[in-house]
Amino acid sequence: MTIHIGAEKGDIAETVLLPGDPYRAKWAAETFLENPKLVNNVRGMLGFTGNWKGHPVTIQGSGMGMPSLSIYVNELIRDFGAKTLIRIGSCGGMQDSVNVRDVILAMTSTTLSTPSRGIMKELNFAPCADWDLLQAAANAAIAKGTPTHVGGIYSSDVFYDERPDLNEQMMRHGILGVEMEAAELYILAARHKCRALAVLTVSDHLLTGEALPSSERESSFGDMVEIALQAAFSDAA
Ligand code: HPA
Image (cartoon, rainbow, N blue to C red; front, side, top):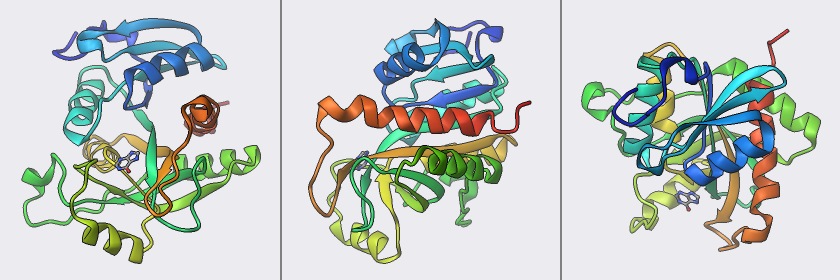
């Protein structure tokens, strides 16, 4: 048990999927895992462990934003021995070529700041995805036929952004989408020698204003969960 995760040590798998929304953790666990068992409900931040094709998997909510994700990921890695951590979340599209419902695999993430800023000091550390996971996720997405983009994203600290000039710079430099967690996940994985990836579904679009209707959210998010699971175990015998 840790401050924020009320599980016993053996209750958490080495492979952890991290949706921001705890209810999406419940939905994904009940939809994709065999024998999902509730392993955490501290603060309602639900976590479940079950099996996917015989492999143990935990799906743990991370909350919104990098400070919240940092708490869960630190405890998952340092106290529970998580080794492969894949964010499954939504993002806002930032390019004409990216459509609502598409999947984005975040190769790297640009930020203004992260919870690790303090230790990085003057360094502009470049958070990047684990190559094996990224490659395996791209292969899984191609095999599924899911429209998928691989490239840079923006991990923002604000949802209600009041700096349109920054978004313009991101778009001008080819950033595919905006979310609020991936950069810190990548930095923590680098620090602790773990593997990390963010697999994101485009739920809304900053250029067109289009948003995924709630009736369609589950089926679109399902592709993302399957891509993440296939990537996590692509090298398993
Ligand atoms: N901004 C930040 N995070 C998001 C967005 C957005 O537009 N859409 C989904 N997550």
